Length: 314
Ligand code: GH3
Ligand code: MG
Ligand code: MG
Ligand code: MG
Image (cartoon, rainbow, N blue to C red; front, side, top):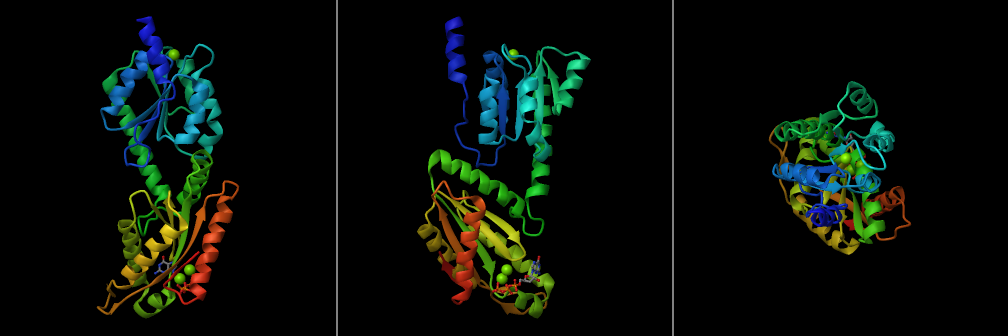
């Protein structure tokens, strides 16, 4: 049994989920040095369709937390050489800016311990032995709150695509990933042509509708791994992961043609069409910075505007 447990222990070190966190299912990070507990809880969570990463060592867990950006963190309190409080402490600064529900599991369940856990940044406290049904439903509530929070902070209200705040955040993450995987990605800055005319001719409300339609058009016509953001006003950004500048340019050229063929109807029944311009910049050099990369894409967009609009430049 001991051998088996040792095997499982090693087997369980820093386990990543089979699929990466791009799908819609939430990612939960579970930290416990008790492997049988880890297995039990992991199974219960996975049964809900959630993705789970597990750690037996808190130090490694912190590292993985920043790398994987889980939607919820669940940590045991007692470890042989450290404490779950340390995990909370290490994440305190991050906690001030990001909302990731944190749940502490503990054999020790006295009032002082619980209060201290909350003070250190825990959102919930579950005592061991764990009631699985209550555990799962609690996690579900936390994930639901997290989802609502993310949607309200990271999604653009008008167009329902990601907003600039999320763009800044994910761009940073793509740069981190570039360092690890050396996989290039391409940023595209997009701007609707003569949008002021649309507002002036057909009214602001129709302008808003164009923005909604345009965002929907982009979202439905790119791959599910490509991410569309509204950067502001009539400006959008797309990040194309694992895509070269040439590939992105071809794709966008096609999208420009297709969108310009779409007939838009104004509030008072007039029909018109709209074009857009785009600039692309491929990020393959790890020494590039997020702000520089975006600036380059924006400069390419500027070039597209100056050379006649309804086109893509690099
Ligand atoms: P260009 O081809 O050079 O991009 O010309 P443009 O008219 O699209 O560019 P400009 O930046 O001069 O105008 C952008 C307009 O977009 C001005 C602004 O009123 C409008 N706009 C920005 N945000 C919104 C919005 O949320 N709704 C509507 N209806 N209009 C918006
Ligand atoms: Mg323990
Ligand atoms: Mg503009
Ligand atoms: Mg414009």
